[in-house]
Length: 224
Ligand code: TIU
Image (cartoon, rainbow, N blue to C red; front, side):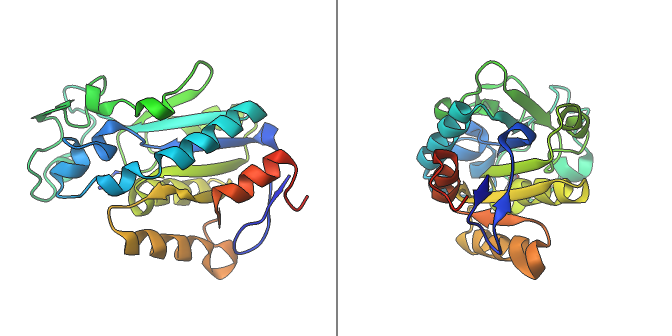
């Protein structure tokens, strides 16, 4: 299957490709979570939910593997290094009690994936203590065991957890494609810069494409 992508066409087989949705959790997308405690306007991020939902449905219908990640820490914060815990001047720190429970803590209401994109049986849900999806998660081994070589990325935020995960994936030998309208940042300029730098220098980190290009490929109306 071929997607019209940048900087050039992206070829993949559904059987060896996973759709990865990074951290589409209430902590980043809804008021009262980690994103807002850092001083961000979370309204921008909610806007990508409909396009991401359409993509998720099409990928499920095509029979592709779905991976959801959450940025999530143990209740005792034993997996949260002081360097992460103490960074900046948020109104609430990781582990503090906010309106949606303890910030970025496993099992809390704010740590759940938004309802519109909730995982279904058979999909992978990976809790990650870092920004990247491979650090301390075992995900590489899981994907290798399933023969996955290609990863389609959506999620938040573009320049933090999504970009870190794409770079980690690139270094592990995956071909990654970022779905441009299924990712968002609190800073539009950072999103634009991230898309530019991913596909620069002949896809140095990977490819990017609007979701309609992937949908067209799945419908068989793409270029191949
Ligand atoms: N702060 C910010 O932009 N992002 C994060 O802290 N985590 C993710 O991107 N998921």
